[in-house]
Structure formats: C-alpha cells, structure tokens
Length: 447
Length: 153
Image: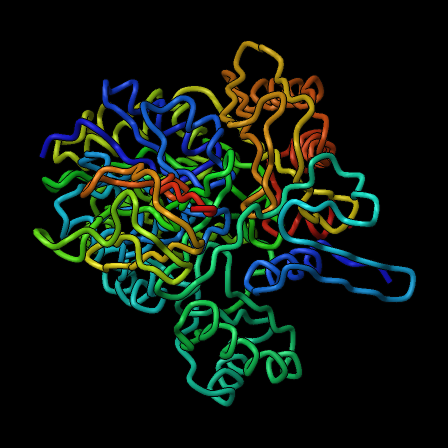
C-alpha cells in the first residue's frame, strides 16, 4: 500500500523524530496531541495536529479507538506509535489493520507472542537461543524448588512484563516467600496476566541488544548491537554502539541469534532483540524482543548512517528493505545520554515545570533529539525525558568527549534534571574502561 | 511530614476523577486547598511557576457531559472526545437540535462516534442554541466547539 500521510500517535521527542522522518520521505504528518500538548514542538512541526483528549494518558495517548478514529478522520494511511504508550499494544495494531490503516510495527500476532515472555522464551529455545536457566512457576513451592537447585539469588518475572517492568529479586528463601504472593498480585494487576517465571540471577551482567530490520518479503538484517548497561531500576540511562566489551565472535553470535529469533516469530519492521551477557563468562542469554523503535535508536543510526524511522515507514508501506546485510557498515562510535527532568538528589522524583531556558551547544559530532526549547512545559503526566544527547566520534573516547562537552555546556533552567549524574558517569573510570554491568550505576556510581 | 510528589499526583488524580469542586486537606504543619475552576486559592500559590494542573475534569461514563466554556455571554458546548460528529441519531432523521432549540443540561445535542461506538453528548447547560459550530459527519477534536448556547434566552 502507498503511504502519503502518517498519524503520529505519540508525544515528546519521538513525535518530533517521526515528523522529521515523514519530511525526509516527503510524507505529510498529523500529530495526535493531548490537551496539554496542543502547543508542543511536534504539533507545530507537523502539517496538522488534532487534540485526541485530555492530559491524562489513559484518556488520550492510551486509547486505541480514538487513535484509529483520529487517523481515519484526518485521512492518514499509516499510524506510527513511537515507543511506550500503545507501541506494543496488539489492539491498536489489529484495529488499524481492520480499518485499512498501516500500523508502523509488526503484526498484532507477533506483538502478542513477543509480549508473552514465556511464549517468547519457548520460541527462543526452539530455535536454539541460549536462555537464562529458569521457567514458569505456578506455586511458591515450585519457585523454591527451582531456586534450591540453581542457587540464590533468583529473579521473579511477570510473563506479561518486559522493558524492565514486573521484575523482583529474591536473595534467599525468606525473600522468595515474601515476594511471591505480591509478585502474582502485581503481575495480574499491572499486566492482566498473573503468570510468573523464575530465572537464575546473573550478578555481573551487561545488557546488549541487537537492532534488526525485517520487511514483509522475508528479508531480515541486523544493524549491529548496542550496550545499555548503565541502568537504574532496569531503566536505561546511557546507551552506546557498538558495545565496548563485545568480541567479534560474540558479535557474530549475538547478531545471528537475533536474526534467527526475528525469523522464527515472523517479525516484520524494526525490532530489538535483547540479551544479557554474563560479564564473567562472556556467555549470552536471550531476554526478550521489543516490537518498536527504541529510545536509543539514534546511536545505531549514527554508526550505520541509516534513518531507521524512515525505514520503518517504508517497511509498513510494503516496500522491501532499502539495503541488504552487505550494505550495513558500522563506522565510529556513538554514545547517547537521556536527559530527564528528575531530581536526582531526592530519589529521582520527577521535576515537571516550565523551562525558562533550554539550549544545547552547537558541537561537531553532537546530535540532539528533543522537543524542548525556551518556554517548553514539561507536564507532570508523562515520562520525564527531555532530550537525548548523542555524541559521535571515530572512537569511543572521542564520542564520550563530545557528549561530556555537550552536557557541560548545556543550558537548562526551570526544572531539576539529571545532568550532573550523566556527567559523573561519563567521567567515571569504570565507564571509561567500558566494563560496567547493569548493577553498576546503583551499586557504585549512586552508592 | 511532607508530601511526596506521588502523594500530590494521587491527590490531583482523586480530584480529577471526582465531582468535587473544592478540597481541603489539613495535617500538622500542612494545609492544601484545591479549588476547581477560576477562583484563586485562598492560600498563596505554590512557588513553582505556573504549576501545571489538569485544566478540565473529564468525567468518564456515557452519555458524555459536554465541556461547557463561556465566551462573551454565550456558552460553548465543546466536544468531550475526538470522533465523528453527528447531528442526528441516523441519516435522514431530524437533528437533535437546531439553531433556536431550547436545551437544558440533560438534552442530548449530538452523537460522537469513536470506532463505531456512538456516544451521546448532553448540553450541560440551559438556554437556546444560537450557533452550530461543527459540520455533520466530520471529525471533531477533543475540546472543539460544537454549539453555542445563549443561557439567557
């Protein structure tokens, strides 16, 4: 199908990013905004903005029927869901398809399969991907039996979770006993699925993920990997490409595994296969697949020179991939920092408000993806991401240098932000050595 | 004991979801006074510049009460949701209201369709319809003016 006008079902920096990709493709963009986002950067940049509901996301950005109605009513032939909100909601994908609107993402059935972490594990095992030892547990006794065999600590995960949500760490049997019931109740309440699974906990692990792209004609390629080990409470803070501590052999193993998994589940569009790499042994384990554009996609764009969001829209239009695997060349290094409106000194509490000043320096090698400028309102209803700063250079040290320089010279007034923490991480010896694990930020940098 | 940001958010959520116009919370060393609508709080405003707050109170459940805004004497019935605006219950039927129709707050003035779900919209105000602002069978946005009503007539 031909796509001429894209409905952007998101807000913030990613809505701006999608509008820019539409521009690059010569397409029109209509942005659906909530009442408080009427004057947002994406709304001003787009050809048209329509108000889809009040500020509260459950009454606007999280309503699949309203999104599809808005897309139809504005003559759009595609819906780009961005990340978060409804990006991995099979209902939106299905509703769009039923109404003849292209969903910029994989088919609803694929989203469902990947979203069921137990089904995804089973599929990964089927195609020979290594998994962290573990499995579904229906009762506390089953969980205790597993933990006794594999050894503590263990992770309790919600089958319907993902993206770092619905995970609990049990250090011993007492922990497991006190957490199990809560975990079941929370999984049911938060994800509508009470099933849990248990996994051996790898204490020193790196988060490495592979970007894949697949078209509707059977072609699947990878665009290298990213390391996202600098995390707080399973939420990524700094990401980079390529991964600093991955050998060429490991890279081959990871990218082949990612492609095998994407093929096995009939993946179409851009997606990310996440792995955990044991920092001690170098073993890798499949974690999950994310069926959306990732927040951290710019680092991959910077080292591959590909516009991934534009590619997503082309794929949704049924076009074959615009490049083959042999045309994916990685060059240089890119590091991204997520600048958030959070008060680090007070438990990372959100710090919404109006930006009196927001200015980023013009630096060679710096890319900034943002919806913020002087006077931008950071509403309290949504994610606190203000900007993604991406430093690029011929090698890791120079990319980090550009980013550190940008963070130092950045001008932010009006809200609290995590700039100082980001600078600390970049300047830390452990980070410079490229050896951090997913617990490092909380156990070392924030300790 | 101070309030956390989560507490404040929770309070705003409760107010947002309630029919309350005003709320006072008093604890040791702490007073909070929130009032919906135009009147300023009795207490000095918080020091945060233009602290963002929900401007409207969406009220879940059908039929949707319209949002009514007042401009130079006439009240505006605004779309309570995005969808397709229908002036009559079915093609060929009489419109729910015309210019000159008398309405009271419970009068159904139009339908808004969202994915084949028809939501009836009530006037939310008494008076006489003086203008129909939206075109039949077209998309209306959340908050878009649908009708103007003269409350005096």
